Image 1 (cartoon, rainbow, N blue to C red):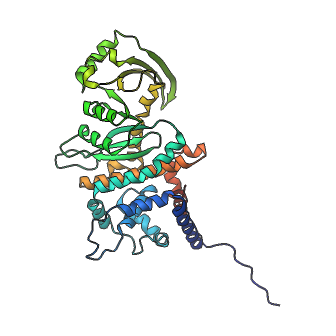
Image 2 (image 1 turned 90 degrees about the horizontal axis):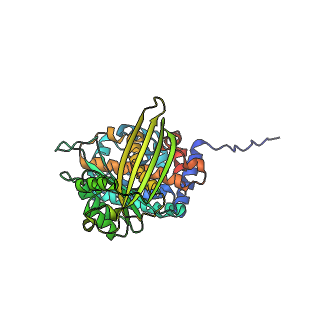
Length: 412
């Protein structure tokens, strides 16, 4: 009697990989997964090469996808990205990507220097816009847009300075909305108005450091229907010292204290005093409209030594004095500093050397997209534990296998 062999119901790893990739691509076309938007972004970047002439071996969008996915898994250098591509070459081919092999390090260098950095930054703005409204609807809070600059310390220009990129960062969604590079002989003061023109700030709160305490910037925010909260320092000397002198003669309309709170080995107590700026600011006509003064005082005790330190800061805002918890908005501005810290720690932005400002900005755009991918994933998750996971933790998890990376990007 012939015995039939039992069916082998265990799929091979390769068959499982093909099934997973096909499933993710089909779903992404229907429901807009992160992977689908990443591919659309890569395809939208203009190709700087002469496609009608010469031997073009690799598609530009394939190279961009390789750079994004490689850095998402924690591979920050070109050599590491190439090694990542070679290790997963068969899986990329099954996705229809990199059919002619993995590009060389010289090719990655030419691509970073050749892509139009302005066009790529604009495409990044369109990429993040796909998720911005979705995540804002989920949180239902008034959006806070933090504006700040960051120096690209891995690149030195001919004048000896580092390129500076000013970005608009949404505190509510955790994604970079838009960026603007400072010109070689300019600074953030001229770049911020151009950045504000790129984004919709109507009904939103714009926060910035003292560099942005300029009349034309404040007027632009007011004209576009937004509110602002900006730190006041000695770059506006007469305004700063005039406010300091008059605060001694007035009592705050509102005052409240947060803390004490324990964090990072310190016990911190924060006090916020709210004043009516029209009673304090001498040159009201210059700045126009209602103004609110926020005095921030902090008392910090280092837990290990008991050493006490105090700090006082002043902020100017167009928000009404009765706006609840203005101190929270002050603290929310520091989220953009945390994002910049993440670029340096998780993606080693300041340690990566680039010879040209164009390559440095293209690298910055790719890295901000990577940061946005993690923020979007957390924003779409339902579990509170998933939302609290850090970028480094998620990078370690998905870097363990290509299947985990694909599942991560399939988040809808």
